[in-house]
Image (tube, rainbow, N blue to C red; front, side):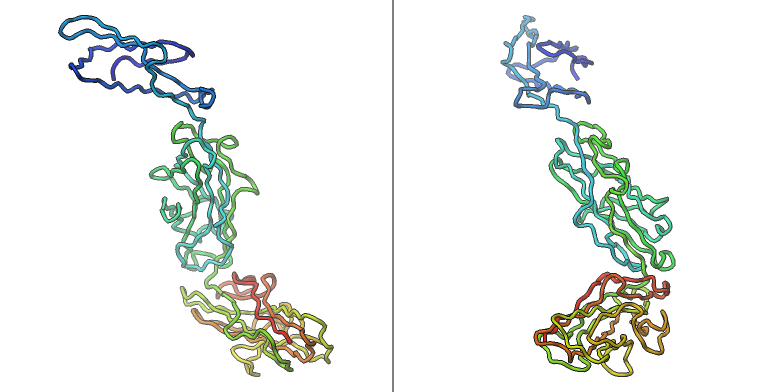
Length: 428
């Protein structure tokens, strides 16, 4: 450093600030000497942000005084105003950040106990209107139910494919990541914070336990402007909805295994003939996880049957029937109440002796081994179909199924991620 620091530059206008250099600097003949000028900007600086209005901090060289090293002759170089300007400095306003739920946030779903690196939430951090980059140093994710938070571990914070850091577990409803190096959100851009987690193996996670994560308030994120050094604060420079509107991911549910349901290969569709017992749909039930070699058991099922155009009224023989693996008497799982035309069947809308779970009117139980599947055949009496009449069978998402994962056996596992599922439409 040369000269003494000027502690306060408070005047506007053509003020002159003199730096006396001791000891003197010797510049050889034909040589040059570069002086860099540094200054701090006040956090409350105003009126220096609009280039169009020439509102800038301007410094220029007023004069330089020296003495000849050999002749001892004093000399002063004086610059006319405006002839030796330095850079024009514009002082930017402090940065800002907006936090919201990102469009890539995953849908609510079952997470299998013992599974790893499950994506459980995605949040958008925007500096799109910020005049400076934003440095994020601390992020806290809150959970909705401390009762089940032990089900998550190895909570990972990602920027795209880049791991920002890991928190071992939730504690008292929160997982806080103190970043080793600041996460930079460049001005004019947005980044997505993706949260992943492992789910504990049974019994560390609770069957049918649910978890929802969120960024609850501005105080859950510590961020400063990269240039200004100004801390972002709620309501002014850090924008986030709070309370019931806080950015909240979808609910995840723990289970010891996982069912998926889809139309089976060969399920009928298109132009069809009529029959007193026609296969109108085939659904494939897959136990898609074998982490714990856990079978899945279906204990009841609903079936929506939608017919188009006016069907002929039949004597009460148009029952819907459900079979396991093939249409054979020994494979019958349930028969709906007699109807004058094919109609939907709700949970507990079946008759069949030998049901072992869920009551006398629920579908007969069937089990799917870990990593395996079972095809379910649906039949109906379609002899009453009119010309160009249609029939479509489906399993609804609401009140469509009851199943158990070997732990929750009371039927409270009452949906599947892949529902609703619709078979092909038959046209007569």
